[in-house]
Length: 268
Ligand SMILES: Nc1ncnc2c1ncn2[C@@H]1O[C@H](COP(=O)(O)OP(=O)(O)O)[C@@H](O)[C@H]1O
Ligand SMILES: [Mg+2]
Figure: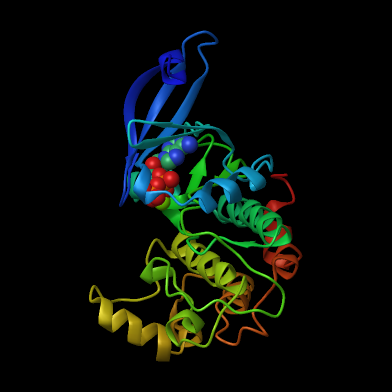
């Protein structure tokens, strides 16, 4: 009998380009999990291997089990009851996140990325939709999920494949300069900008326009003009959204940044 018989399928909790995510309940233990169901042809074996290797870190979505059945992959993961950060922001558009909560998210995201990068993996799709909340009250308890675009990298070697989600993509990807793990820091900078302002950095709905803005715009200027951001947070944003890859902040620099330290001191 298929292992799937041990689970009860529940409500749909998400969907993406290739498949859906549903809640499942393990019949014997009554434990709830999430299950990403994708056509087998859309899953790279590499994604599963990378995800398995990274699982176990408190800020990485844990992959529990993978099952192949009738042309589909069933990827069972821990369930994050708080949903994804994008949905959270949309549902709480009238009550922006406090700086303490935003800093807790970025700190935990940096810990997840430090783990991925330390294991030689660049995520390449860091964005609000792929950051999951275990609860809607503890913003340190986030999990980085969706390793569908993750890739191995090695020191001194560059990647060239143009992937990611346009709003979050780093300039070096679009400029075909070759890129590495620093692209995840840029994307995390876009996440931070969204958390602080409730907006995206680019003010256009047209993708060609956004591409041009990413390649040419002086994002420092956009940040300077944004009056609602305190100077320490702006300094962090500028470090994360530095177009010069060599000068872009590292995960360590971000974790030690005064804005992160001050805003997370009472929040673990
Ligand atoms: N473990 C989980 N707990 C809660 N929600 C989840 C979980 N995994 C995925 N989701 C929801 O499903 C959406 C799509 O999942 P994701 O793994 O990002 O797939 P895709 O590759 O299709 O983007 C997420 O943005 C989120 O809303
Ligand atoms: Mg996703």
